[in-house]
Image (tube, rainbow, N blue to C red; front, side, top):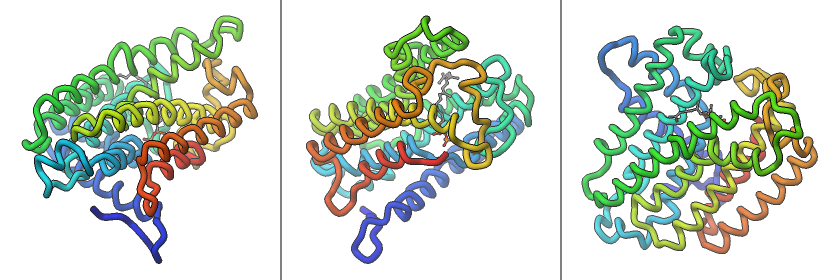
Length: 320
Ligand code: GRG
C-alpha cells in the first residue's frame, strides 16, 4: 500500500494529492461518455468540477485502516484495497455532486456559484440541472454494483447499496433537506439544539457517516472497527457542518467558491445561530478531542501515517 512520506514524516498533502487524483481519474472514467451528450456533459460539469473530495478521501482512508485482518484480505490477499473501494468512493461523490446541484436550484437555495463556477442550472438551465442530478444519483448505484470487484462478497455489496439509499433518502439527506426548509426563517424560539443537530445529522452527516462506515462493511472488517468508524462518522459529520456554518459567517466568496452569508440572510437553523461563533468553536474543539481519542483507542491509524486523524483535523480547520 502506497503511504506518502517525505524524509520519514507522514506527508498529508502528498497523501491528499495522490488519493484525490485517483478519485478524479476514476470519476472521469465512470462518466466518460453517454447519450444524450448534453445530459452527460451537465453531469460531468458538476461531478468533475473539483471540490475537496472529502467523502471519497474518508472512504479510502477507512478502507486502508481496516483492510488488514478483514474478510476480503483473507479471500483476496493480493487485492489493492484503495482500488477495491473506488466504485464506492465514486458513487458517494456522485450522490454528493447530485445533492449540490439540487441544493443550488432556485426552488431550494437558489445559488449562482459553486466550487468557484456558475451553478449547474446557470449553465444548463433548471430542467437539465434537475435531470443531471437524477442521472448522477442513479449512476451512483450503477457504478457501485456494476464496477465493484467480483471478489467482494455479494452480501457485503448489498448491505452497502442499502446503506447508500438510506443515507441519500428520506431518513438521510432528503429528509434533512426537508427539515432544513421547514426551519429556515423560523424564529429562535421555534427550534433548539436538538432540532439543529437532527437537521445536520441527516442533511450532511448521513453521507459522511456512510463514507466512513461503508468501506468497513464492503471489505468485511471486524465489527468493533465498523462501530468505531460509524461513531467517527457522526463526529466528523457534525463537526464538518458546524465548520461550514462558521465559514458561512467568516469566509469570503473567492476562497469558499460559493456565496457566504446565506445562512444569516435566509435565517437558517445553524449551530452558530444557537451558540454564536465562540460556542461553535468550543464545540468543534471538544469534537476534535473526542474524534482523536476514538481513533487512538481503536487503532484506526498507523503511528507513522495518521491519515484519519489528519482528515478529522482537516474537516474542522479547513478554510473552504
Ligand atoms: C441525495 C436524493 C438526494 C437528494 C438531495 C438537496 C438535498 C437532497 C440535500 C442537500 C444536501 C446538502 C447540499 C448538504 C450540505 C452539505 C455540505 C456542507 C456541502 C458542502 O460540501 P463540501 O464542502 O463541498 O465537501 P465540495 O465542493 O468540497 O465537495
